[in-house]
Amino acid sequence: MQQKEFVSEQPVYQQNRFSTGAGYASQTQRFFNYLIDSLIFYGVMYGTTTILLIVFYLTVGGPGESSFQIVLILVSYIFYILFYTFCEGASRGKSVGKLITRTKVVREDESEITWKDAFTRSLCRIVPFEPFSAFGGFPWHDQWSHTKVICINK
Image 1: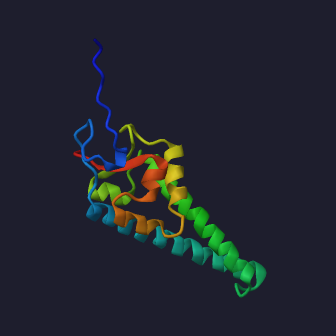
Image 2: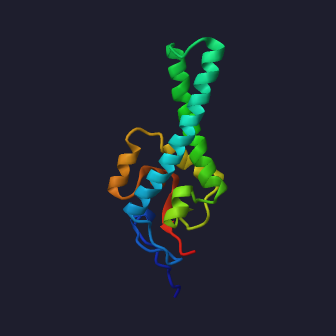
Image 3: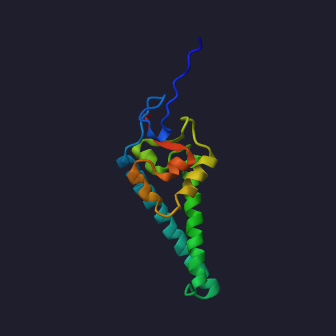
């Protein structure tokens, strides 16, 4: 008689503990991750926007045209995706906020995230109302990219 392994019927984002013993990051930790990373992003974006405004003003003659606003919005979305992809991809799942709160992004099987996972998470973040999905406990960018944020002990 063969023994069957127990496989949880629950999706991974509804489980509390994992094989490594690590637990999910709390909503408070995740909020601080978001706050710290957002402050850094907007600081860098403010500097980049200032440079773009100066360059646009010197070359075209002023940012009064609506085409500049469209370009600025597209650049900000692209920069947002690249910023989070680079932060999480280069540091194996640890943005500056996650370093401070001692958390980390991992795949559902608890392996390290790949650049593709980091890009998918970043792309999901630009969906309208996505930040509000965190009030349900598991943001869409975790569910859709099959990742999770866990506490680290190091």
